[in-house]
Image (spheres, rainbow, N blue to C red):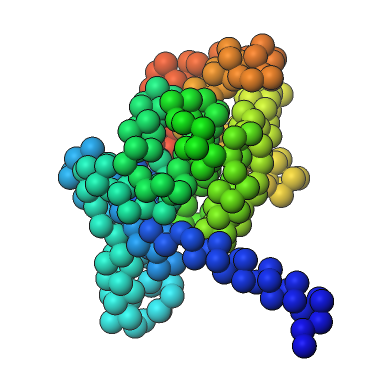
Length: 316
């Protein structure tokens, strides 16, 4: 007979297996770098994936991101075996289908993840439509990094809100291990548990948190980055020296200005301005007062790595 401890362990294992099996079919709305990255890791872990975007050109571009990334993975995974590399890429890509019809794309989904523009009205309208087309019981999730999950869910019914959560992946998705699983007060424990099981099934590490501005990482990261800019504005040290200090003194893989440029200065400004003017519990918080230097760079179109110039010049 099983001992009580063995019984509990067996029951826990069966629960985990059931939860991870609950999500087999994933639909990703948005074929940009984030959406395509999410699609890639899910397809690599043998999930069936549907990628949805507004037109075929966007979908082709998204599949191009995935194929290019998979080829890099295959070269590391199979070294000099060109045949194995090719077969690996083909097998993963075969699990990804595309469509420009959102309703069709979510019709059989166990999990729907939205990865589109950070505009709350656009997201609300999208989920109001998707919730009607997705199967009953499917989990609905937003990949937002800065908008309140509860606010995005405003148009949904109580039953739909119970299966609505945040799944915040980090860029680049194939390399970054963390996924923040964000629960609202309305979210069911089952939805959270199944989302956590899915995150583990795709080889990522989940961190569960409440629906609060910035969740965990950005709530800690944004004040750090803004204070770094203020040190620069006060001429305490150069951007390069501040980056060097944080990398060698605090063990960070990137300095704050390298990270600011990588994230995108327009994205950072959008988040801190929003938190300062209307963030729940953050409105008027001096940590998020607008920065003159940040405003100037964004106004001049110097947004970081993506434009070739931010706090650093990448054109050289």
